[in-house]
Structures are given as C-alpha cells and as structure tokens.
Length: 161
Ligand code: MG
Image 1: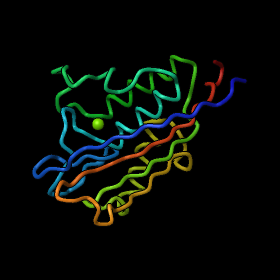
Image 2: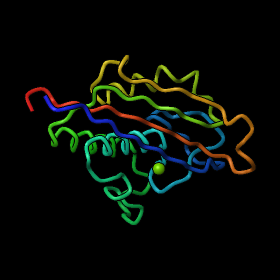
Image 3: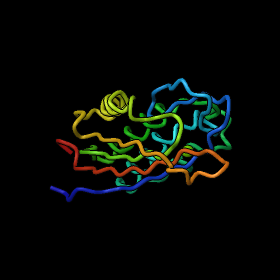
Image 4: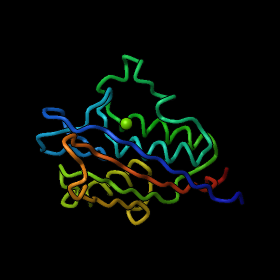
C-alpha cells in the first residue's frame, strides 16, 4: 500500500458589490460576491489545488487558465469534477479534506452543514471526512472586502489501483 499523500491549497478573491455569491458550490443571498473570471468560488478553487497538490499534478490556474474564454463565469463544480477525474486517473482517491474560510460576508456558519454535504457528494466521501470552518476577518480586512480560503486534502491509493 502506497503511503497517503497530503496537499494544501489556498485562494483569495476580492468581494465586490453585485457579483453572484457562490462558495463551496452553494449560492448565498449576499450583497457582495467573489470577483473573478469563473464563478470565483474560492472554496472550490482552494480545494482543487489541495487535491492537485496531493496528487502531484498541476495547479488549477494551469489547468483552467483565465485566458480561456470558455472558463468565463464557469461553475467551479465543473473544475472540481475534472480535478477528481484526474486524481482517480492517477490511481488515487480522497480520504479526507478540511477547509477554513475567512470572510466577513457572507456568514458561513449557517450554511456550513449544506456546504459540507455538497462537498462530500462532489468528492464521493462520507460527510464526516469533509470539514469546513467559517471565520470572520476580525476587522482586519481594511476597505477591500475579500474571501480567503485554506484547504488541505489527504489522498490514498484508490481501491483496486
Ligand atoms: Mg480562485
């Protein structure tokens, strides 16, 4: 049995007025949303980079560049599905992931269970192998509002690989 592999990913997006607010694949009713080329779902972006990092593959920006018009406003759940396919193709499978989301708006706490369930479904993992914590910026955000996400992922050899 090959040793487990760990990966880390992070992402940071400015939060701006009038952008749709999608984090962890969940749509929030919020005045501000993450600015970016795709749907700018910083939770899924950080998670993708953690999975790719653990698998020794490329990073999200290389796989899905901003310069590619087809990626404009694209749902990041599609990015995660593609990343999971590449991880499986490498003979690996997610064993657990953990994430920390820093932002002042939206409040993550009330939607935490829904995001965990969604990520667990996307990763084909039991919900107790997927965790996520929301934290405020404690007044350190300054004038520019932002969302910052840190993710770690543990991969193991896929059954039968
Ligand atoms: Mg991003």
